[in-house]
Length: 426
Image (cartoon, rainbow, N blue to C red):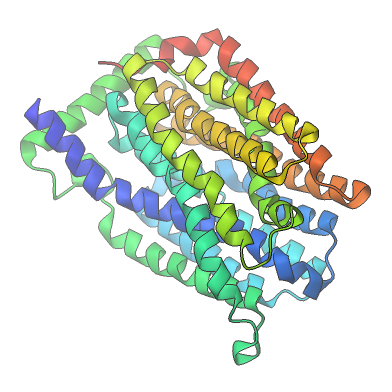
């Protein structure tokens, strides 16, 4: 047991911080446009619908290039491919600072999505390579925890950056894109030199711990393939994989519809530009805390489906309730509950496909799920912006977003064919 625990601790210390940091900077580059929009939309003459379309076009690149990017990662290795895409999307994020109109904004957001399309499924694939199933949900949670932390950090640092408006002749929103893109480029170069290709190549694992980890991961892979062996085409055509992907579509529509418009929604509740980023951090702080306890509970019960279905259902109901609420504090509480439910779902249910799939099939299947789910990431922001332009309010858009988590809850609760993969082996 000491060998097992020591091996897992070393992986948590050496690999997880890299995955956390990569997803952290990705989210900063992905959602900082929500804070930039507080002044950028006016400067560029963007309507809410145009902003929503541009925000959603980021995910069109995800949908198109996610699977090819992850198959390339499986072929050449994460320590080569992940740094390449990080540097590429960091440069694309930097270019956001020099968009001049809706068309150039559309193009840069599309290129940014293409660059980042392989990151999340790639990190999941790396997680499968390093994390035994018994510990995977907790380790996955620690990686996904970077999401609310990045939005919280982005909220807190965006406000002072926006105050640089006019410095060196640049707008505050231009400084936001410039200063938040540079760490991504630097981290991509660092990633290349510190991530081993796999446990067998890790110089910091002592031989007994290395042998235990390699043997454990191989035994788990053989056990899964004894239940069912998935090749690449099996993964791409599996009804289970597609149902998980469709559930992710609803979840992502709600997640990104909220993330990318929440600063404007909060501002619309009567909060000043200066205070909006600070208030915006509150829902993600609550979500981060809830994720920790919820995933630990899921591991202790060795159950995934209901631990995904319950928070998804709560998220959907909370968002639908926004149509009935008038008090700004009550609306913010409902939005907080909705965001928390979405993140708790994501932290648990992604463990299901990562337990089903191995090798190149894992690369293809995880990328397919992520790509299809990001159809929702495209539709959610665009739909919210369209409704805002046509009704003058965000309320109906938020209610529509609530349908996605409710549908995901039904899938998670009823998809019985995934249950044999859901519990980690002891």
